[in-house]
Structures are given as C-alpha cells and as structure tokens.
Length: 333
Image 1 (cartoon, rainbow, N blue to C red):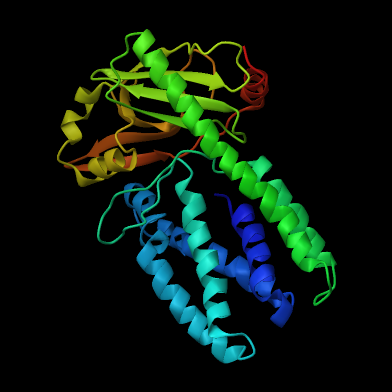
Image 2 (tube, helix red, strand yellow; image 1 turned 180 degrees about the vertical axis):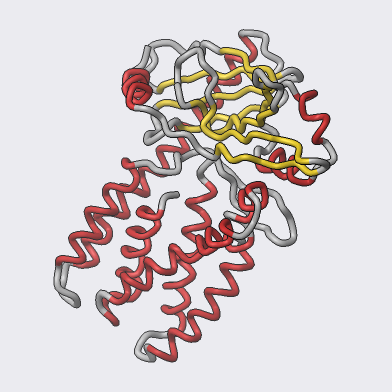
C-alpha cells in the first residue's frame, strides 16, 4: 500500500492502543511502526533493478522481521515509557508491523512473508496499491485526532470512525474477489480458453473494475469486468507470451529474477532493431482499453558483452485520457 495509508492507519492504531497513556505521541509511534518495513526502499539505490524488485517487500516484510522488531522495539519503548505496560508496547509495534505486512499482501506486488526461509511471495490481489475508498475514512479520523486535544473523551470514537468503515470496505474487496473469480472461471469455460492459471486484480484507485489474466501455453487472455456490468460476459483479447525470445537470457540470473518477480505473468517483445523487452502483465496497461499494448511495468533487456543490462522502464503513468476511460468503464457496459 501507499505510505499515506500506512501512516494514517498506524496513527489510529497507536491512538487506540496507547493514546490514553502517552497522548498524541502514540499516533506518531504508531505511524513509525506501520511504515518501518518500507526501510528496504533505501537499498534500491545501491543494487541493480532486478535485485531491488525482490528486495522490496522482502525480508523487512517477513513475519520473522516483524516478530524480532516488535519484541526489540517494545522492550526499548517500555524502558522509555514505564507507565505503559510491556504488553501495550508490544501491541503498539506489533500491530503496526503486522498490519503493514497484511495490507501489502492484498496488492499485486507480492510480499515475502516467509523470507529468508522461502522466496514465495504472498499476494491476495484484492486491493489496488492506492485505494481512496479504503484510505479516506482513515485520513478524516487521523486529522480529527490531530486537531482534538489529547487525553479528552471521544478520541477512541474518532479512531473507530475511521477504522470501522475501512474494515468493512476490506471485507467488501474479498467478497468482490470471490465473485469476480467465479465469473472469470465461467467465461474461461464458456469461451473454451484453456487457462493453466489466472489472476484477477483491481484496476487503479478502485475495487469495482477488475483486470483478469488467464494464462495459456502460448500467452494470455486479458479482459475487464465491472461489478456494474449488465451481463457476466468478459470480452478477452490475446497477448502472446513469446517466451522463446528469452532463450538468449535463460542462463542470466538477472533475467530469471525478473521472471520470478512477475510470478509467471510476463510476456516478451522485440522492437524494430531487435532489442528484447520483458513486460510484467500483473500491473496492466497504460492505455487501459486501447489496442496498443503499452504495459505499466516493462524492462528493456540488452546484452553488454556476456552480461545482460536492464534498462528500467519501471512504471509508466496512466494518462488523463486513460483515466477518463477508466471512469466510464467502471460504470459498466
């Protein structure tokens, strides 16, 4: 999730757990705890693109890291604020760290819960990385608590005003996921698409329009479905995998890291001068509903002697025209 969401969620958690004992400082430390796993972004400046992709949401987003830091931070925090029970200190840091891990696992990027024992990435694909419908109630409550004087009655109520609607919205996203999965499976069968595996993931900034990717032996069938669509038919288009284009890189660790990061949902293309690009399909297209297959996440692969060089086309922005199309498509067809 985005840093704003982690921050305001941590502020409300801190208020509920320790606000009555240490005042508004609880909101500050709650926000710090909820953002702490993202210290791994600092490493991206010192490593290659392929390594930075896997280091982010790696060990610092693991259960082991959360347990070790929660206990250590709680011990130090209890020494500084002895009026706060050790159990409350542990809850303050533990809730912040573990809620960060949980929220990040809801997005498409993937989160390394079991690092360093396993490189498996956990992803439930129920929430877009920034969703105002989830975050806005948290922001409103956090602002109200910043304005309201500490140790006054009503602060707990304000914290719950933000947390309860956001909790129900999260529950709604899981419900949506179940419904969309059933519709996707029905369409694969009806349209005779032999999908070996598939994913459904929300489109930018909402949970009403979903992006569906069905993987076959030769490529991917992709389509969109809105909860407001009048029928349950998904119009699919095909994207070739072109996996054979990666043969020249097959023994290169950097290339294999990119493939691992994509969790198997990638395609390859060549440009007019025969340069190869790898595209991570999970994050969709910049022109959401156009014919041009311009991917949000793409990486240009080039040989430099015997070594591969990755030129980052990390993330392209969705333009205003595509955003207008997104709003229209959410309304349903």
